Image 1 (cartoon, one colour):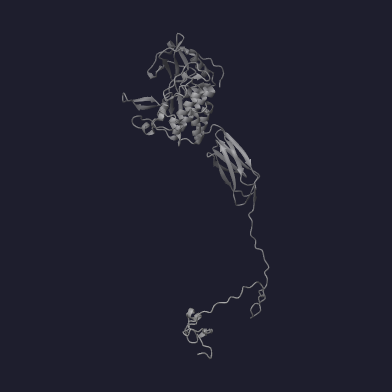
Image 2 (tube, helix red, strand yellow):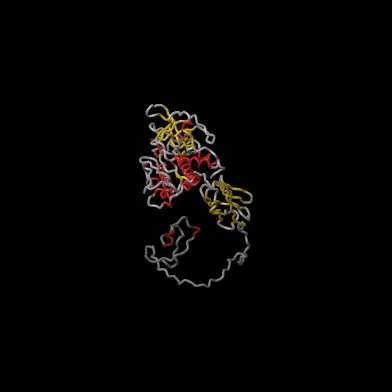
Amino acid sequence: MTGPATTVPLSVELADIGGLGDQLGRGGEATVHDAPGVRLADAPGPLVYKKYRAPQDRSDDLRRLVALRARLAEADRDFLDERTTWPLRVVESGGVPVGVLMRRIPVQFGDRVTSHVSKAMEWSIREVGFLFIDPARLGGRVVGRQVPTWEQRLGVCRDFAHLLDFYHRKLRVIFGDINARNELYRLDGRPSVLFIDCDGVRPSGAVLSAQLNAPDWDPPGGGPLGLYTDRYKLGLYVLRSLAPGAQSSVRRDPAGAAGVLDAEGMGLLTKAIDSSRAHQEQPTAEEWWRYFSKLLGEPVDPPVLTEVRLDRGFVVRGQPVLLHWGADDARTLDVVVDGRTTSIDARAGGGVEELWLDRSVARIDVVAANGLGEASAQVGPVAVIPPPRIEPVPVALPMLPVVQGAPVALPEYTGPRMPELVLPAMPSAAPTGAPRPFAWPDLASTSFPFDLTDLLLGGPALGAGLFTEPEGKA
């Protein structure tokens, strides 16, 4: 966290900051003025003077904040300067703090909008409270601000959590007065936030002087501000910015984000702001940062392979073997077989891949990767066997005797036989009512077609010679 000891003055005299420029802003306890005559070697860029309305009795607190920044490693100090308006010097008059010097807010964290008073175009800071407004109203004529996309909203949430995590773990301080106006956001490029009013932060674990809560941001149960209250207010910010609309700025029920966050996000949100839960269950700012980074496909850790297995150890050639895989925080998954690589989009976190093998292999390499590193595993071996073949097989068949011009003599059947069936006599269709014996007709002299029904029932002759009466019968 800290770098080489850096000797910088912690305070300056009011008389040494020179003439002040325009008043840039004002609040309940201070006004902010341009300080064009001030230059600091360790903090390049335009500076402003935050002038307290009344002298402060927080000289030691403010000096500690300036000293904390001076002890940071260069990369951490640059990060702090870029993302906050951290106190750079305490401005004193006769040894009493009357203000602080800070970095001027970059123009990227504001918009040029029409003033409701002068009707002229003026630059105005872009507070995170705008994200709580119904999008149709936010982009309308009255408010006139850019409406963020869903991904941009997630990006601002991620950056908010990242910066608060930097406060908690790197600087070991609490922000305290998180509200709709003490954080600004930008949407151009990578969405990010800027923490302002940083002269009110406190060392974590100790409250050296009282802090106030903004309306509708007070934590349940009251008590001193600390890590618990920072995490609670971060949860409120997530809820209100991701579910904007009417009454969103006072919303506290996590159910308002149902249908907006997935199951993991709803779990984090409920633990963060549900007053019935213990403080120990609250997600940290780091957990929120990791969650939003994962949602945006920008993991903050190297990938981890959670599953790599094959559904079988052998396969018939021409059939696939299935690779089951799972990976956390991976962007790509490379499957290497016999020197050939197949790349898969791994952002889904898991899946099943068909592998078509031409021959047996000793192993299959699986490599998950993202911009921060790789994770690898091996599976196998896999035996590939040829498919079965159908071959004609000669079968000897028995030879039946065939005699020229004579029927084939089949063996006599000696099995069980059905009882003889006796059919009742059928009535004759002859006019006399007596049955007439049947004689086969002389088909050679018969005209076709003939009536088969009359033939079988002994009806009248259909043609000459079709029926003949036996001799001796009238």
